Length: 160
Image (cartoon, rainbow, N blue to C red; front, side, top):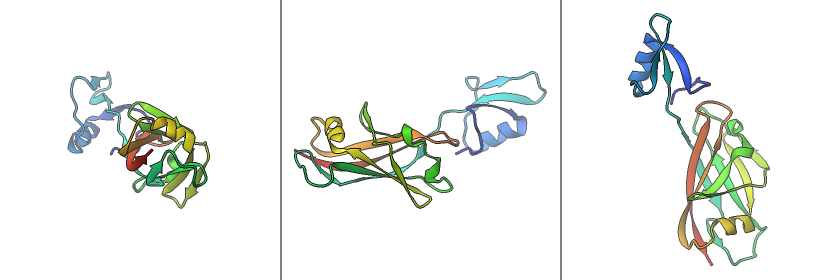
């Protein structure tokens, strides 16, 4: 991951371009634009996703049950050196394929590295419509710092 970049398009010196090559960013005609400054190029970097650890509770979702508090909890952790406070809470969605839902909007910070939010069971029931057995749900959203986006997933068992 390239840290410290605020925009996907930056101007770099030849030494900076060499560093990008060294860390595995492909530089080619599609993403490098010469500038009028001697020895400087403009580089468009690929969009990067920060992998996040996601845990969904309960691990077994009985769609026909009314037990519990009527919510599904999501716990979201980012790898170091990132902190959970870098997540923009309003951007977080829980998805199954192309269908996505948002949480209740409230996030609890559990230490520096974990956020917890609750999703209404009825909303999650609508998301899981027709799903049975092991189902992988994705969580994604935006960060207030580079790389700008995160994504993670967890598998749950869905029962009728």
